[in-house]
Length: 262
Image (cartoon, rainbow, N blue to C red; front, side, top):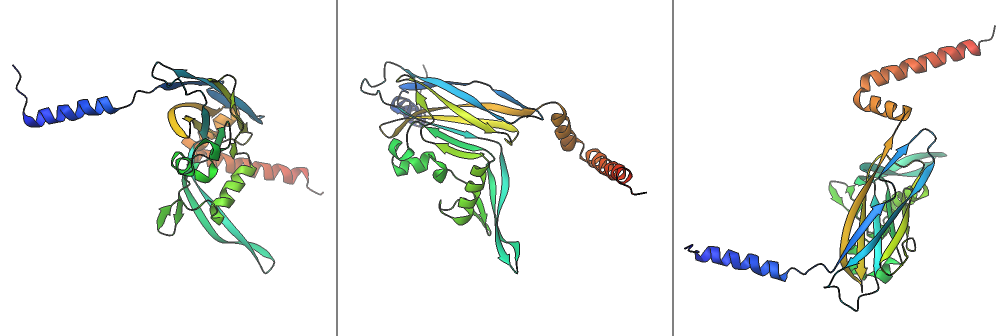
């Protein structure tokens, strides 16, 4: 016979109670991407992937729950980046101030089936980071690290510049429900897309509340000569720099011969 101490009995009661209070997940998302490995060649000019999936219901799904909203967030490799403010002084544009963004996505896209403010309340939108204005972009502000208000001049300039290159974007009508539970959306990738792993987070909402979420990923890699150059620069920096310097000297020497005036 096993004798339980009062503490053991109390802990067992807590574990059982917690297990009973965890709600059963009534829906789950099944998703996939049309290509999990994108190869970048010298003539790469961009492409569009397709994310498709379905909402799987079970017996615990409320019978009245038929309308869903979907938000897809695609984020590329993270890096530190700097935004600078230029001012014209004495007829010359010079850098007068700057702000460093820490470990922010080099590519960021948010897609949904309708406007974010129609999907959830402002509080839920901020908590779930729905829309570019609600995504956390940590900055170094003096000795502190923080995210600032969306209309901060440096933050606005950073998002605008990334958006101009197609690296930051949002589209509130990009997700299409083909049936009440089957959906798809495109993921456009510009020609200057960064190399690395891209995380895709899919969130399912109903009546303004988050129902469930899932994740997938794809990878962008260089192949051919570009891959050789990138690997050489990364793993053999000294010899890569030496070879680059020699090539520059050879190019200058050849140019001097070709354009020499006798």
